[in-house]
Image (tube, rainbow, N blue to C red; front, side, top):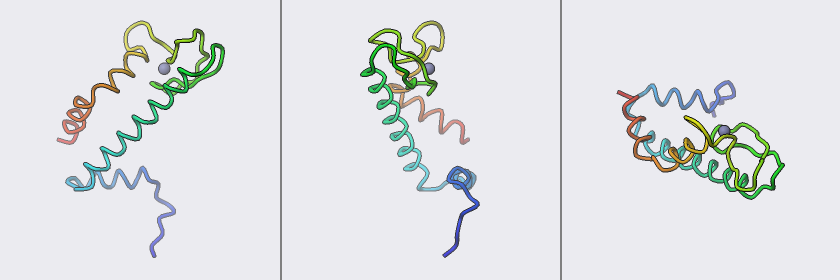
Length: 106
Ligand SMILES: [Zn+2]
């Protein structure tokens, strides 16, 4: 039984990416995206359900923030590239994420 104590999961994934056309890669990428999405959604629901004045984790950038109004769920919702917009862009824009992923592999 070989042991991989020196190798992190991240490094293992890097190795896989370097190998190129791995049939597992598509599945793994999809799975990772689903998990990330579920975590984002969970953080969003937690932030939404939290009371005003409580510290929450921003579902978009993962920074802690204090909730200032009952409907707030992100650390920022104004201006360009604010967390609210980027969260919903990411949540809704699966197809463009996939396109970016494959573009970066070429
Ligand atoms: Zn944020």
